[in-house]
Length: 316
Length: 228
Image (cartoon, rainbow over all chains, first blue to last red):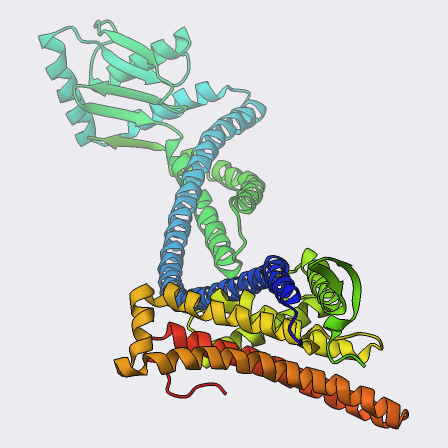
């Protein structure tokens, strides 16, 4: 008998055990591993797809952003260059304006300086003239300047024209009866008693009064009357001072200054970097030049004899 | 000379006996299960995997694909039964290269047992898939008259399965034995090679027929062609 029934039964059981064991140890783990791997690969592929899509999106976004950025940059650059151009023009204008202002200011300062220098010069010149004249007179005539001035004044007063004398007298007479207003004699210096008496008697004599007739005199020291004497009555005035000499002196100085300023402005226009300091230097130099010339001017002024030219003037 | 390894009995206690068939079956079971356990103990789910795991995956996937190709929609449900059939028969055939190994499939008892398993498994799978009534109704198709013929066909194909495998395996072993006695050199080696080939072919045939029977039982339309 080829079939042994016990063996058949045993083999059935064996086979079922084998099937169960293989299912347990072979098929299930292998299939699970394959499934896991496939899932893993699928997820990796899906991930890669997703990433690729994302990358594409990002690339597009980036390209778009780049384009926008480029456009913005171009716009901004243009805008900036335009702004810079405008700003540059504005700043240049401003600087030009400022430089113009500065030039005007400089010119003004120069002019002021010139004026003040002129003032100082005339002041000093008058003092110098006064001193020199006084010294010269003292040395030569042994008489003080004041005495000389008084003498000159009196001489002038005597030699004024008859019409002027009449006008002055009229003015004085009009003044006298109404009120006892004194005849004002202004001098730049203090008169001695003798000089006062001399002036009084001379005026009285000239105006046709007696010596005994009482006329009120008022002697006033006035610094504005530069080294001179001035008699005023009711609008009429007889005066003599060295201001005439000073005026001519001032004219001479003015001419020198004008020529200096002209040279200076030429130098300024030639060189750009000319500063206020250098111009001050120039003015100092010109001052020196002026003070050098001063003596000459003053000498000229003294040389032109006071008596010859006559410094008095009668004004109405 | 023994026609079947059943006749080589190591130990017997009345009805119960331990013959070469059972012992070689155990050996095959041990080899299969132990190697499976060893390889699947540390499976990798990464792209990198061991060669043994790769071999097992190839085997399992191909069996699964064959089942699917025959027409079973869910091959994983049948993998344990059909795959085990194939692996058992194939390993038994391959074992013949070892001298002294008596393949269990060379015993009619073993092939009958396997055919019996298929005979029982086919209606079980059919009922599970179609339901009892539908499965039983399939025996009366195309007409009620066909019922006895269908039943006869069911039994006869089971017998054919058992005898075919037994005949092939037994004949292979028998031819080698006879040739060894006649021409001890060279020729038995060629026949052993041929035996390996026929053994694998038989394993495939047994497996594919079982799959076809199950597919026929589980599908609503019964194929007209019957395995022979």
